[in-house]
Length: 443
Ligand SMILES: O=C(O)C1=C[C@@H](OP(=O)(O)O)[C@@H](O)[C@H](O)C1
Ligand SMILES: C=C(OP(=O)(O)O)C(=O)O
Image 1 (cartoon, rainbow, N blue to C red):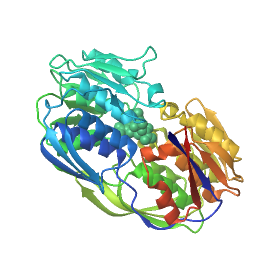
Image 2 (image 1 turned 45 degrees about the vertical axis):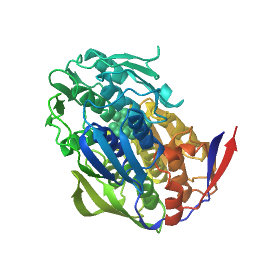
Image 3 (image 1 turned 90 degrees about the vertical axis):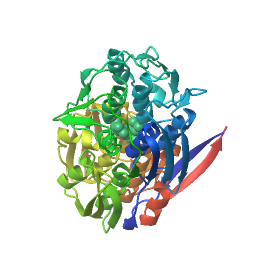
Image 4 (image 1 turned 180 degrees about the horizontal axis):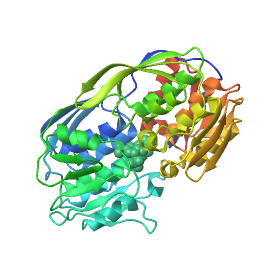
């Protein structure tokens, strides 16, 4: 039996009040990976209790790591050291999570045992050559399908990986992190050069575990010399989850919200920069540093938005926020143009096509292009039935569109909101979104 979830949003309303959205997904994954490889006991708080991060947690349990929790966001990891993982008894199932699969492929390439990585239908369609090809240059043995997709059969080549100096063809934190994790098991110094800055949580967290990692300009380097020492990790709220409310409060007249304890690492704040360019009022309050990551409270007051050409350098810094940014564009006066974002086509869904289809259904002039979208904002937003194609961020983006719609919006296939933000519907309702959630069991 599987559950289907449908969101129904009544039109209009405003967002008001305070909320703390759940922990950062990227950091939650990495806390489990590095905590498991550390010597000693790592305590994590603010861990994201959602399916993607839990898939990573289960994978490490399957490799013999004793992990307590999660309970109220607290996880205790009894690290086994860099060479302490054990062969899993079965394949590692990673659900919907691209981050788990790509980072683990690097980490597992240099282990003294074999593994098979599998995922759900969406993950099994996502491109893995971007990691298997550079890993092969390091001497890894990974067999994918003919299309370069999962399942990935990894033959562990402990002691046989060689360092590479690799320039990534695309700006991807997953590819960078995969190669850095493989580099921890390779002979020589592994370097990864990125064409544009991407999220740097792996590098920051490695330093937090006292593992040497070096950055020179856009190049990051690591070697096998070093060990991870257990630490305390405080995961801030995920700006990618906060983004739904940053947009919602901006577009719904009369809104005024404060989101507490949000991670504002500069490699993640593209959504704030883009919304401000569109005219949004977002104040960054109480800036502080928590465990090597910048954190702040964000206050958003509604303000009329205007369409813009989104600067391409902001694309990797807001890569997961485009579904909801397209909704902001639909509510902005004038044209918004996104270019340089072809990566959106290979996420949990083709986020360019799926968002354009849904926006058109609710009456918006949205034209998909190979690498982005052109949206004419300011028109009447109607209502209708859209499908998320099992993509959590599409489901939540259309829920937010309801704030400016004239008729109800029904969003099909929303169960995957649980991959990143299970509390979405409750938090959204508390802030003022008129959202109803229907659950049905299907055989
Ligand atoms: O490293 C990470 O944690 C992530 C990197 C990004 O993917 P890419 O590296 O494919 O851009 C992002 O879309 C994903 O949600 C999380
Ligand atoms: C792209 C995403 O995640 P992943 O690549 O880990 O599946 C996302 O959360 O928007």
